[in-house]
Image (tube, rainbow over the protein chains, first blue to last red):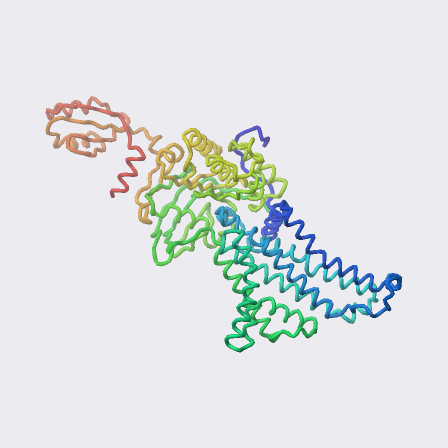
Length: 286
Length: 314
């Protein structure tokens, strides 16, 4: 139907498959997100450290460069689990800053504008809605966490020798799992908080607050009750424990890896439950 | 995998309520609703709290069913929710737009979520925005739209995928008279296109009267009246209202004997339905026989307002 023929005509063409429709939300989320210059600049800043690490790995194996600086080979920081653990710490911090910036902009506008009934009156479920928004955030966080980590591992393998890569494959797996778990937990927390606190700025502040306040409350509990269990509500310490355990590195954290895994599982489940509870087409006033 | 848009045989009921009961918390909002609606446009009326919005939300699968069930275009709302939603377009009452999106990208996204391929959704988005009258404003963000334009944008997103049933919840809310006229014209045009059925929920009886063939009136979660306006409009029956002066006892019985369906509205006021071949001079003859003066004789039928008020009194 040509646009100038202003009569109603039904659609009789083909329809797409149902399950991948959540990716439509991801696509539209990106087109809105990348209109923000602040986000683009921050994303570039988040990649500074991985680029610096890549440069370091390459140059530390460059004999000419080391000779020029007068540094004997092997004197520089070795590329091992310690190196990757600190990569996780730095990029982990960038992760929750980026999450605080992006997370609340994904769901809050839909809730503020009452747009959920428009999504959910279509052949599109709440889980697909969550999957679409979560995918947008996870893909963005992957770009600054595990994707550069895997690239760093491959660079080190290529310059040291593929035998090193084969021997340390467990390290790549640990790196991948540790960072993937972290971004999933952080993304779920951000979406859950932004679903409950509809105001974007407040939701962003709350995301940051969860991590900083957790550390503060944890220390306070430890001091008052003279225990070490306060660290369990400090999510930063919890994830560092898990990542250190996966990288077989002693980070000197106060909690056991098992309890850290349990805390992460509970946090993710709680966030998902809050999210599913909040995302409804309408609110029932009882 | 690609499927095609589903078509529905015209003879099937559009909405079949089969003892539908809905509870929200401990309150029973809809109680044992039973009716089959097959009109091209059905009006849903009722006072605040009658359960109109809950009925719409239940048909869309937003509320769980406590008893009975309902079928929309032959699909069960509980067991075939996904199929029902594929066939339905919904224009909600409240503001439900994403403020920082342009109209064309918003409508396109909604089309894609309904299953249209990206290119077809873009084409349809342009078409329906022109159709509802937002063609010139389609690249503006929705946040800059006036209330009337927002209503039209909500209508555009509801029809972008070519639904078989369009559910409109208070479509003319907050519109000025020209904008309301435009909305009514669009609804009538869509109804007359023959491609879709319409379920219109409105407080404005005039809107329903101007657009709908059938009317369902709810009160306290129950059906209190059903009227087929189309049948009434197309019937050859004539509606006559007379005012008399004097003792009119027995006149109603006399009129019924000559084939009129008669109702005494008040002393001295009668309303009757007269058969097609009935001659009005018969009324004068019967009145003269009882020594009554006829002060007034009007041709008229029950307005929707009268039907509604009567249903509310029952």
